[in-house]
Length: 272
Image (cartoon, rainbow, N blue to C red):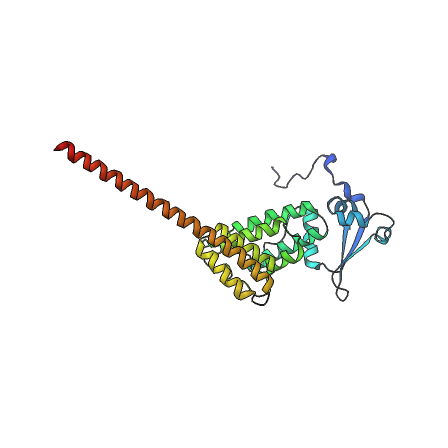
């Protein structure tokens, strides 16, 4: 009789080396409602430069094997640990599509804080995969305003997730990229999105983004002036290019008509 039970045997050399290492106690969350987590030292130190440095002598954390992350969210740290142990992200739940985006972005920001580049790569891939999903009628899922706020608050300028977020907003904006924005969006994000729209979308969309930007950030005059000047300069360049192309096209048509006229007169003279 053939057994359907999975054969779980693997080479001994592939056994996890961290299981015999000390356990680190991690206190996560605000002081009023902290949560405790436990993780093998070698596992997390191999991925996180933050934990690796914390476990070096003569730090108190290294002596007590205890690390406090008061600014982290316990639920997000739990997702991080699950990814650490299983290489899987347990975020696919029957919840709103933007909620999963927020979870993925928060885990990325946590990995940024913990200096864990491998986890950041995992999260970038996860966000891209999420952006490619479609619901029953073929509509894609768009990350919302909170996601942009999370990313720009928790990542450095020029970071890969910032670039990806601007690209996703640009690609998924139909005619008004600010239709899902609120007044709390980061100024850097608004500037980068406007420039991206100007470069990658039709002229009308770039104009709409400028109008919305001015409406959204009316109080921040310095940023608005910089954004306005850059966008208007780009729009003028595009209009100038269109005018040059149109002028060149007219000249070519006139030249073509003159050539045809000369040819006709020559033909008539020969016939006579």
